[in-house]
Image (cartoon, rainbow, N blue to C red; front, side):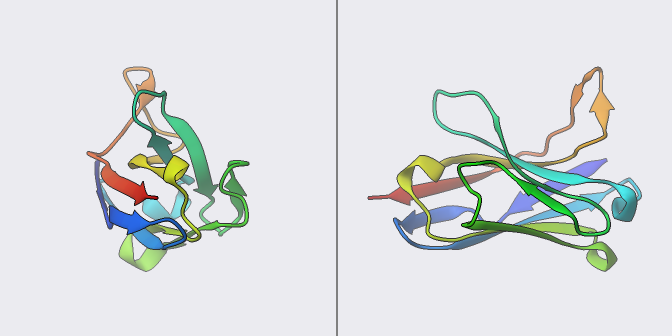
Length: 117
């Protein structure tokens, strides 16, 4: 399994970014895909998830600002982030929610998001 996150960067407060997660090595369309983030000095936290059919869930802190989506034909999940705040800064990771490797989630290299004031 390989996960490649991209799309991060530096953005001002109130700005937007769109992250992508390209997946290979599993049957993408049947997997629930999730996004997590790890703020500096803090634990990794849940951001959003999407089922193969497009049902979504969001963490409380991003509800109404972030939109998770997927393109099963491209084996890619997306996270559109709007009205960004400094507290949204961190490394963002995607993961197949049902996949465990040695008892833990499987992560890609992540993509850095920095929101400046």
